[in-house]
Image (cartoon, rainbow, N blue to C red; front, side, top):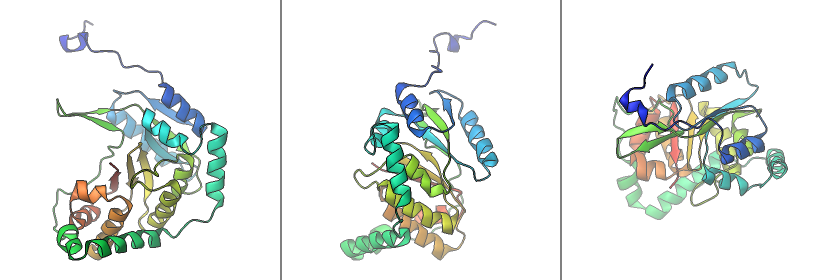
Length: 262
């Protein structure tokens, strides 16, 4: 069948993993499925849902958006598979901090530093917006601003053999730059949120982290959680939802949490 004109000059999508993808796969040492850039978004999501349904607690599936920057972040904690394994084992053997207290301390610091401006400029009102729903994983997507379209970045679907969801951050350490928390804090907060909201890491890139979680219907609890989100990732408020109240509204009806660090 002859190609349509729109397809004639379309470059072929490379199928082999990039060098960074190959290295990350080797570092992890667990089952991975590679998706080259330009793959079908629905294919990635379908594969993720399938392995999640079949996991039966044996592993945590995570979509990892591959980049040279992510590899550099990982290698801050070990530049070989053996070094990363040693880092993971050490992190998993140490007692976790109190994730709830860590979040509360950060919130208190914001309130103290901002004074009256905190309530006026940050909290905002809880306004029920039926369209303020987050139910689509986007951490592995790129955006073409010129054509106003999204596209699939190179990614790998990883079956991380962690006993608990929050241990994902020991297997795939990143963060520790600017205001992005270190892996040990991510573990502590991840444990706290899993026990309270069923939060499970779903996508990771060098600057984006997404969780699947239960919607928080109660307004007071949603507002408190939104404050915790601000403590964990201030950019999700100040450069995203703009107010804690708007974030709380989204959390009351969304099954996905999105965090992004600048």
